[in-house]
Every structure is written in C-alpha cells, then in structure tokens.
Amino acid sequence: MEYIKHLQKDKKLSKILGTELHELKLHKNIPLRLMASIMSQQLSTKVASVIFRRFLDLYNGKEPKPQQVLDTANETLRAIGLSNAKVGYVKNVAAFCIEHKITDKKLLAMGNEEIIALLTQIKGVGKWTVEMLLMFTLGREDIFAVDDLGIQQAMIKTYKLDIADKKLLKDQMLKISVKWSPYRTYACLHLWGWKDNSPNF
Image (tube, rainbow, N blue to C red; front, side, top):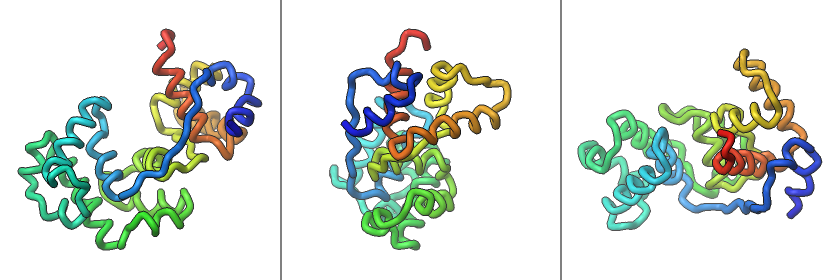
C-alpha cells in the first residue's frame, strides 16, 4: 500500500510498522458517531460497545436522529449506564447538530481544521474526540492525535523523547509527525497497534 512506502522512510517508525495493513472507512450518520465517542470516553472498548448497544436498543435497534435523542428522558439514558455528565454532553451534541444543521454531507465537504473548530464548540467535545471522529468515522488520512496518551507513550519509547516538559514533548512529536504527512492517521494506527501488542509496555 502507498502509505506503507511513505512511512517506511522514517527508519525508527519502519521498525514498528509490523505486517498489518490498515484501511480507513467512511461511516454514515456522523452526528450519531460523535455521540457514541462521548459515550465511550474513559471506558474500555468492551464496555463502550455494550453501552452503545443498549443505546440503540432504546430505538428498537435503529440509529436515532438527533431530535429523537433530545426527546429521550435523561433517566432513560442514565439507565443504560451513562453518567449525568455524559447524558448532558450527548444531548448537547444532538442539540448542536439540529441548530447548526450538521449532516454527513456538510461535514464531508469541510476540511479537518474546520471540523475541529466547529465541533469543539460543543460542551463536552474536545479536540481529541473530534480527531478520533475524523480518523474512524470520516476516514481522514492525515490526522495526528498529539494529545493521545497511547500515541505519546509509543513515540516516547520509539524516539527516546524527553518527557520532563509536556509542551516540549508535544512540539517534538509534531515535528516528527510532519514527515509522515499526508498519512499521519495510518502512523497513529500503527503506533497504537505496536503499543498494544508490545510486551515492553
């Protein structure tokens, strides 16, 4: 694949790329995916998928529109395992998507930085959350999640980075990531994969 050849130019990264090839896919119903990513914050993948399944069950297994989510009682959303804060944030997303007429078509026509600027206006949605949405829902190839703890840990180990100064660390990471462009998302996927499968962590 094209991206592998490009990333292999970075000698340190090439050592951890492994054999698995990643393919990015575009998923429909982006507003719902954003709600799902809020539900999954600070939870294991397994628990997050259970809660999301319960969420869909509230709507007979179908993907709800933002208005349906707004019309759902807070107690009902709490009952599937969401905290009060998350219920509020999920409803914030639904309200924002209605108010700003957020559709898949609208977001797909926008650039990465535009989408980050738009969606981080929602209370409860940070830059990291939107970056994950760009990677895993919109399938954007050139996203670098500098604030992601897993990426930080993998790069500290691979590039022997100094962790004493957080700001300096992020500056170093961004500098290294420039040469991965326009395939930074794939680099992140390989860094996560290496970290998850490496006995050194």
